[in-house]
Structure formats: structure tokens, C-alpha cells
Image (tube, rainbow, N blue to C red; front, side, top):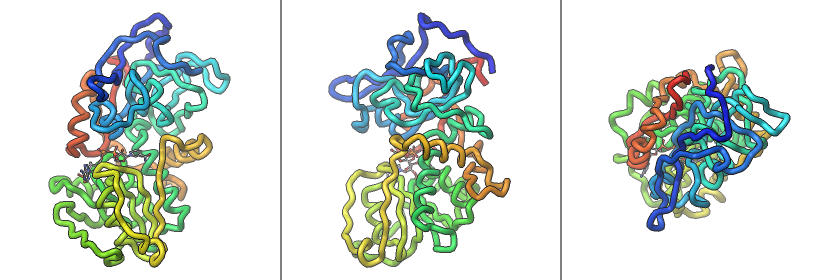
Length: 348
Ligand SMILES: NC(=O)c1ccc[n+]([C@@H]2O[C@H](COP(=O)([O-])OP(=O)(O)OC[C@H]3O[C@@H](n4cnc5c(N)ncnc54)[C@H](OP(=O)(O)O)[C@@H]3O)[C@@H](O)[C@H]2O)c1
């Protein structure tokens, strides 16, 4: 991969989140390396990706920023150009996701990223940098959620598994991973135009958000052995009321709300478990294990493999200069799959 030579006095482009009128807003700026937050490893960014949190940060639609100004972007993949830590050397292909990236440490929406060595994951064999960012925080979150659900005894033979916010980045990837593992996957979506897309990812049934009768009883008809929830709010409350005996829910998102109004009855009468998923704070040993699983093709016979077969089907890329156009679409729920941000005209 051709590399642009690194020099600390070089100016480069970054998309920085600033505070304007009490809200966060994003803008392109020119920076030099010493203006980035400190860290032992400097990475030339080849790809980043757009996550819901990035859209909240860049538009001020949600209070996710922990300090201003801060370069946005929770994900980055690229090549090390400098390292003060013996674990990494110039030329290493690496990725970084989560931790404080893009919220209290300058993140991946920049041509260079400088981070603590403890945050850096060597690019696992079997993934290109583009594929790593097609997965990004979304794929990592989907895999972590499935890992946690299966640690809680979810198995394909237990029954149906529902995925909410189904056409979104995390959900699109989760659907593929679950279907490949033999689960009967039910998608809950607000997009009537994307049913063919969802079927192509492997869903067995589709529920339309507009037609859904949620009911109001503390316990409704038990339908799901497992659930992965991108939405929160009323949707998550409904899930708690419709889980089967010993059903397990992974709650990772709030695209539809942050409140949760339910009763204890699902938990004490059906043994329902509600598991929180926090990808950003995942400790390095588990983080590496999950990335290894994401790089492993399950068709090789390895049961641990979670790599989605149709990874390219969920990806679309935008040049770095077009990044701001993605945020409003994402917040309006109009995006599907994953948006990969491409840096530099010489990079492939
Ligand atoms: N906990 C973590 O570590 C972690 C990591 C990554 C993401 N997340 C969270 O997970 C959620 C999904 O992230 P993402 O990157 O996949 O975002 P995304 O690509 O924008 O997907 C969100 C999906 O949710 C659905 N949706 C949007 N607005 C909705 C509303 N008002 N009510 C109900 N459904 C709505 C839409 O799917 P349909 O049109 O198909 O319904 C949309 O495509 C976000 O809340 C994000 O902050 C959490």
C-alpha cells in the first residue's frame, strides 16, 4: 500500500467537533501532529467509518461529547507511521475503535490519528483495512452482543431471535452473523422498502415497526429466545414483555429512546436476562478475541468464526470530504448498512 511520508510539521485534514451555541457541531480543519491528543502510536488513517454516535456528536443531536474541541470518529484503520511503544512499528496495519476516540480523545476522522498503544489492535489476518472498517464499532458491537448472549446459553435450538433497527449498521451485521450460526432471525424494521435487503442478509421473518401491536400487559405472548436491541425505549420495554422463559436480551442502542418502562415480572416470572453491551470500554484481551472471531470465516468449519459472508453487501464508501452529508441521513434512520470513510486519493 503506498504511504505518504510522515513528518510532524506536516498539515493534515481533520473533522473536528466544536461547541457552538451550547451544542456540538463538526467542521473541517487543518491540524499538525502536535495539536492531536498525546499517544505513543501515530497512524496514517486509510479508512474510518460512521457510527450513530458520530452522527450525534457531529450534529449536536445527542450529548455524547465529553470535551471540546475534539476530532470526531470512533473508528480508524490504517498503518503505523511512528511508535514509541515496542509492541508496534512503522508499517504495521492496525485498527482502533472505541475507548475515548471521537468523544474525549481526537478520533478517526483525520488523516492521522495519535493514540495510546494500549488502544491499538493489530489488524487480524483475514481482514483488509476496508473490511475492518466495514465492521468497525458496529461489527464489534454485534459480535460482542452475540458472544454475551451465547455466554448466557442462547442457542439456535432455543427459538427465534429478534434484531431491532434491522437495517442499521450493527443490526445488518448481527443478522448475518446470527443467520450463519443457524439462528432463526426475525428482523424488526421501519423500512418497508428494504425487505429484500434483509432477506438477502439471512432473516427468516420481517416485522414492520409501523404495524407492530405492542400491547400493554406486563407479560405478553412469549415469542423470543434472544433479542439484540438497537432501539431502546418502548421497543426494549416490549421485548422484555415478549421474551420466552429464560430469554436473553442484549441492549446496545438507543436509536428510538433512552427510557425503559417495564415491570420486574419478565425477570422474576420468566427468568428474562437483560445484558448491557458497552463496546467502547471492552478490555483488550476480550477485544482481541472478538476481532479474531470477526476475522475468522465460519465456512472454514471453525465454530468461533463470526466473519459475515456478505460483508461487502452492507458497505458503501464515501470520500472523507463528503462525510458531513452522512450524518443527517443516519439520524433520520434513512441509512442502511455501513458507511466506510475513505482517506487519500493514493490509498486503495
Ligand atoms: N453499546 C455500544 O457499544 C454501541 C455500539 C455501537 C452502536 N450503538 C448504538 O446502537 C444503535 C445503532 O447504531 P448503528 O451504528 O447501527 O446506527 P444506524 O446504522 O443508524 O442504525 C439504527 C437503526 O435503528 C432504526 N431506527 C432509527 N431511528 C429509529 C427510531 N426513532 N425508532 C426506532 N428505530 C429507529 C433504523 O433501522 P430500521 O429502519 O431498520 O428500523 C436505523 O437504521 C445506536 O443507538 C448506537 O448509538 C451502541
